[in-house]
Amino acid sequence: MGTQRLEFAEFYRSSRDDCLRTVLIIVGDQDSAQELVAEAFARACASWRTVSKHPAPAAWVVRTALNLNISRWRRRRREVPLPDTGMLAGLPAAVTTVQDPVDPQIMAALRRLPARQRQVIALRLILDLDTSATAHALGITPNTVMAHMARALAALRSDLIPEPQQENQP
Image (cartoon, rainbow, N blue to C red; front, side, top):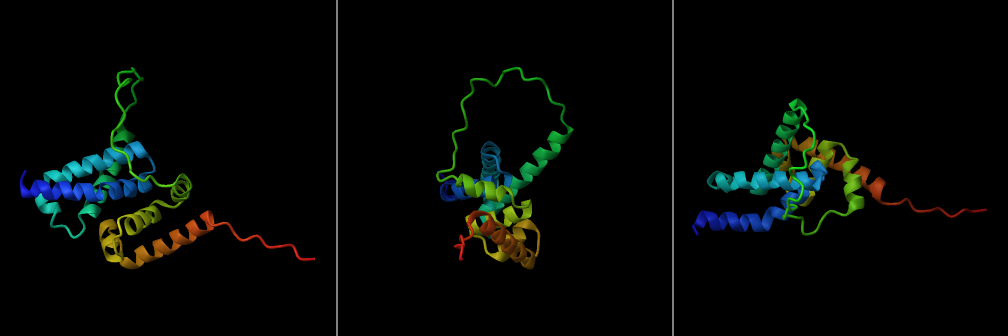
């Protein structure tokens, strides 16, 4: 196995779960996230010489997966649905799963956030990108990243942390 293939294999092993978690948080559907991340990793493998020089290859994979999601969404808007013929019945389920899936209560709270806030949370907290790298990945300014992060964290805090009960005083 060549050096490039070994490098990519190590990159894949070390970052697949974080990339999948990040895309899952943003798109909100496990099956879609798995398909998108698999396709993005396939593209990363095909272009590994270029992708390996990227300052944050995992962010490249996530951005590619999100771009694929947008393309899929645009294609679906133009498609005409066909009746279900049952041709896919009996096919095995996807093999790839997140090792430590996101807690359902947290996932529900994240889904209630606006899309850009979900993206910022996922890139900053799951992929551990700094503000500049997150801004670059999303095509926004670092100040905008910080504003979205602050709003998202405030919304999550109020959604997930119960307010302390005050005792009735006579």
